[in-house]
Length: 247
Image 1 (cartoon, rainbow, N blue to C red):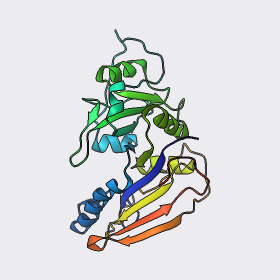
Image 2 (cartoon, rainbow, N blue to C red; image 1 turned 90 degrees about the vertical axis):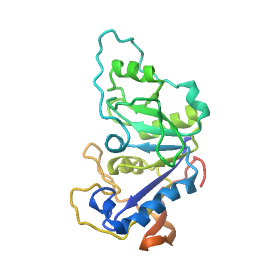
Image 3 (cartoon, one colour; image 1 turned 135 degrees about the vertical axis):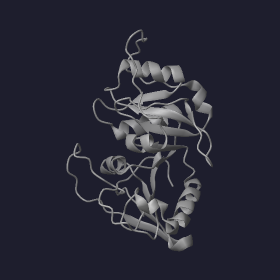
């Protein structure tokens, strides 16, 4: 399968959480700074987020689109050709087609402007496709009712020439890719803080919609102390022989 090299790059607490109160602790600030700086180490052309993460950090809520007077588009992939020259993408995993955007580009402080690619399933309504087309947002279909991670990666490589992709949560999305053996490297920046929160999301969480899976083993590539008593761990996460872009 010709697909991008996938690195899952996450900031985590000592107790394995990727959100919660530990983020606001002053002791976590050096790790947060290091985590942001290390994004450039991987030279990824795209970052992929799950719906929950997008709603919390990037999207402008959810949209209610009326089917009345909407043009009808087949459930086929759409690529805004103007996006192909940008070289930077945000992949928005949005199986039902609900996320609200004001533009086809996201510009986050300290990062280059990135064209949005909506990753949909066939549950997305035709009216939502019209909404995305009006905004000039590219979209691809990957699965009927549940996201087909492997198919999505194939399309990202074929349509947008994405060779290196950063997977950045949440925990359920991370596990979905790992369960399909689609993560090539796991990169963890660990803050020297724990809050014991039992409701926060962990690095990897299996959805009840997914079948059971045996534990996944990792191979340590590098362990590096960072400022503020934080730590950077790099693991090889895919035991199989892969055919994507090498590290």
